[in-house]
Length: 274
Image (tube, rainbow, N blue to C red; front, side, top):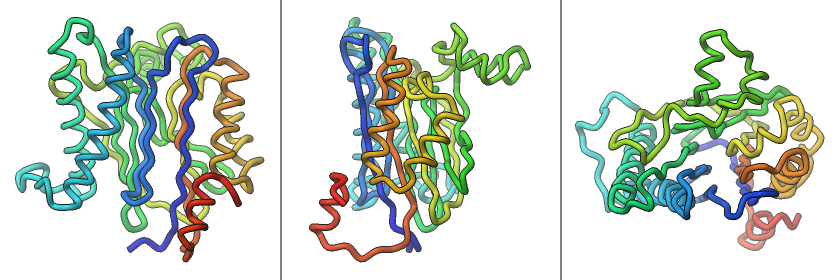
């Protein structure tokens, strides 16, 4: 049983120049789940891929929780139950995208990033592929939790670019891993403890293209007393004002003291009415 209350908010925006929004976001308070997916592939394919990713992930976790779907005992038995659940759900989502893509010439090259986090007890478990990110803001300091699966980040690891140069590089958008492109994909699986006051930002690359880490940390510090949904909207708006060349999506999660809220209070808080 968690010693915390967890608040979620999500915002997605088409940006200034794109004709459609290929990002998908999902938050589920009852599952303790937040997800961002950034689709690619042209036509309506990117939107379809990202939508499949977030909804198959959520549906699978929900079915496992209710017993409608059983995890095979042989599926990575050494991992924690939540890790197994997240990884199985991500693999099924990848299979669903790949199958859909192979069935149609129009959708043949569609794919998507996926970055999701789920809470159990006092821990967070994240599943990640692509260049969407999870940032953790703790005690006034911002840390990128995930690692980008991009050619630019490969160059950073090899010492050919600095991280600041990579964020501005022309090869920034070249992914080395994504969902739906291959029958099997390797996901990063991360598990880490959370503490009171933590704020997480899950975002598509559109957000950090318009806001570097210093600016993001400043926004989070200045907005720490704002309702979470208003702060989330503010991050997306500032990034859009600064750049706006891509779709921009953010899911924000805040770790709060345990609260006993009435249904009306929960509804008001969800819509940012404090």
